[in-house]
Length: 98
Image 1 (tube, helix red, strand yellow):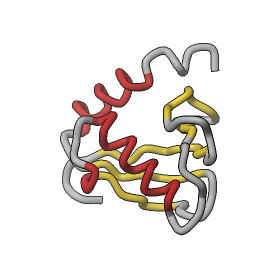
Image 2 (cartoon, rainbow, N blue to C red):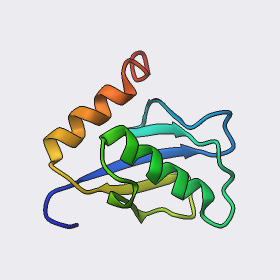
Image 3 (tube, rainbow, N blue to C red):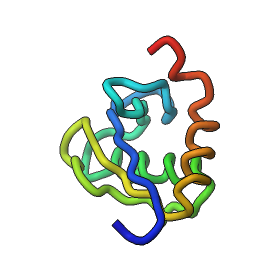
Image 4 (cartoon, rainbow, N blue to C red):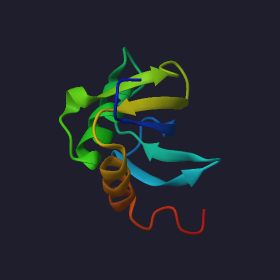
């Protein structure tokens, strides 16, 4: 991992109506992704979504592990505590009751 940054564990659900975080499942952020899992489309959409949610440019988020499965690890460049604060705010109350 580059100096600074955050690793985000994700449970991805492709082919959803919209791309959005819907809570936490088994210690991973559950994200519904509108793009299909074809030729990396859902992975790119996931990285773009997490970058926007963290307030950084899309190139600052990339797959570290799990590009072919539902469980993924995404690296987001930036100041870790600020990234975490922004991601938590973006998820909002979606994780309550999960």
